[in-house]
Length: 159
Figure 1 (cartoon, rainbow, N blue to C red):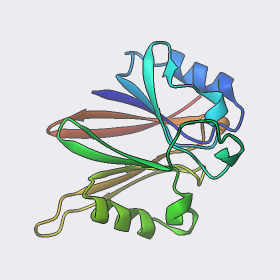
Figure 2: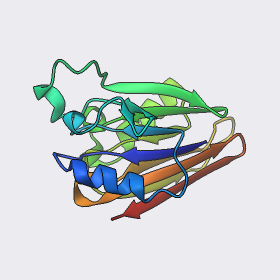
Figure 3: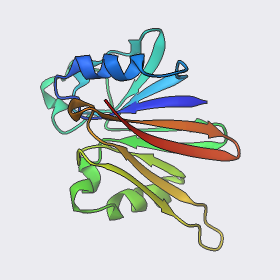
Figure 4: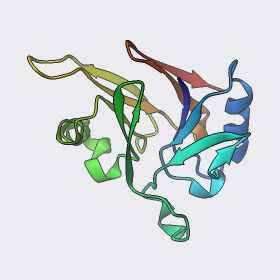
């Protein structure tokens, strides 16, 4: 499965459309990690959008969106969050702890406006945990994720 990942659009709807247009294959879903809920709906070009609320999305209480979402695809468990509730600007410790508490192996987050990928190697009896930030689509950055039962492949992109 292929996913397109956005965060922190902050009013730059055009960047979302441009990133979508650059995809060679239509993604199976789009993950939007907050701060710009009004910039994206629940579908984009017939692709479902799964959204979580960011710290700047409080102005849109009418949006039926949660602060975090736990999903399962291809045998992997994903945590989608903006990151502000886990102190992402101070480091990934809170995100890593949330991954362990919820049993996910992939954490997708935004908030810092910096592209990031960290792979936490598995310890005995634990699974590898991936922490991925696509950067800010408002600044022209996005991410992709390809998942299969045996594959976790991230990429960062820019406009």
